Length: 451
Image 1 (tube, one colour):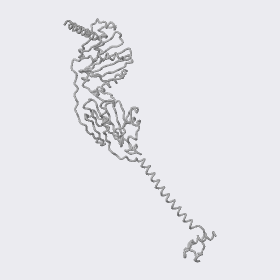
Image 2 (cartoon, rainbow, N blue to C red; image 1 turned 180 degrees about the vertical axis):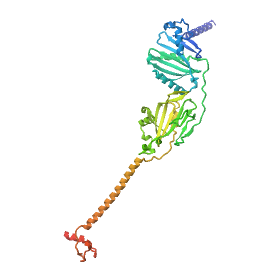
Image 3 (cartoon, rainbow, N blue to C red; image 1 turned 90 degrees about the horizontal axis):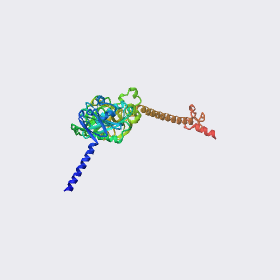
Image 4 (cartoon, rainbow, N blue to C red; image 1 turned 180 degrees about the horizontal axis):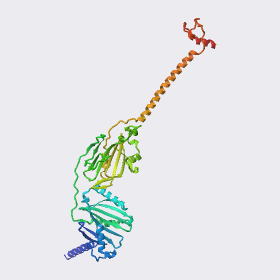
């Protein structure tokens, strides 16, 4: 019994010591303005509006609480954590936003939002190395690795919007690139966040059946995959006819349009060619780059449903939540019988929904047409035929004349007597055949002369 009690006491002591060491290594702070609690490692000295004015961190920084809190209010800083080395810091900021919650947005929409944010960073001279989506237990974050060369700062920022509050949790390094330790530290801090309100539940999308879309202008047909449906365009576009969106992933879209390129040519530009000449085979990558205003280094050739297409991943402006973004999209182009066909996918080839886009492209049936001979080729063909015909006629005339001349030569060779040597009949008109007995007088004369 005593042994059991001693064992129990030992276990309780161990648990107590373990718990003490855990709690001693970090401190939890409540930031009511952000509606959350967050844990910061104890190696950092933390400044909030509740930090005592006589705390050593203010003297370490050569400032006062009043001055620093004033700066915090101007820059929307709610917590600042600094180690003794002063070579890094953790900064938490917050401002209001018209968007309610990142968790209510799909990854696709969030990446579009992030692309706009990244563009603004670059305009300020801050280089973004990479960014992705990070899923917290309650919130969804955009995670950004950046470098501010002007201020000699490298950073790793977790950005979210929760209950209309845009919050940044950033590790800033002043001694080079973000280290693995710093990366782990900021991730641990973010993972410790506990919001006062429950997370937002993402509504499930409706299930839809696949269907066939028909282009009324060209009779081109293709199958729109399941869980995609047609949605009205925000504004009229010159080269886009229809938009399809995913019922499973908000912001994911496929757009299609056909353009009568032949109809855009002037009568002068059409001279020497026909509508059917205007197809993929007549264009090189450089031509497509010029025609659609693309960088030719981004264009490749791909085969879908047995036909060649031009494909490129580009950046294009789009609008979401009243904000203009510049996300990456995949564009696929085919030119056939004078028509330009454009397909656009709201993502890159590594997107999980790109397979749906490929299935759509592999179902496309372009209208059948008989390729015509262009007027230029027709003129050449007709000219060649005429040459052959004329040459044939000339050859026939030449042969006929050769035969006729040969006969004339036979007739006129030698001289004829005035009387027939066979029947003594007079020869009329100096002919070489006797009009009475029919003998060939020239043959006789030549024979006699040759004797």
